[in-house]
Length: 95
Image (cartoon, rainbow, N blue to C red; front, side):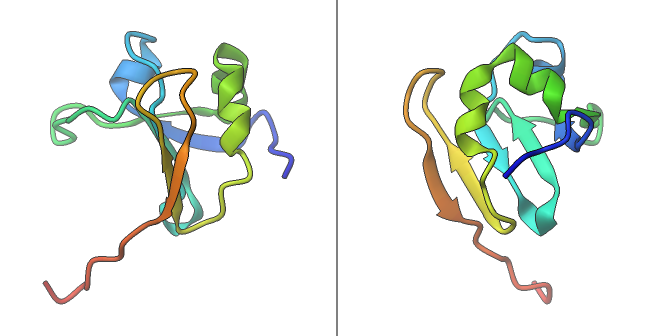
């Protein structure tokens, strides 16, 4: 899969300011989300939107998950460690 440099990606503030690496990549509903894997208060700290190419340039190891299909996520314990891929568990909407 080839992504445009400008493909929209949602990222957490820690990834945005480069204080933490991307350890969780999610394609819930097809959108790209790249997060540090830590907890966040998204009521106070909304995700940022960037072109995914900026993140691929910063961390070329993210190229290992650009083929991640919609409905899946990949996680790793640290940069340089292998990605573990899994289907995103859907929570029933009536809960």
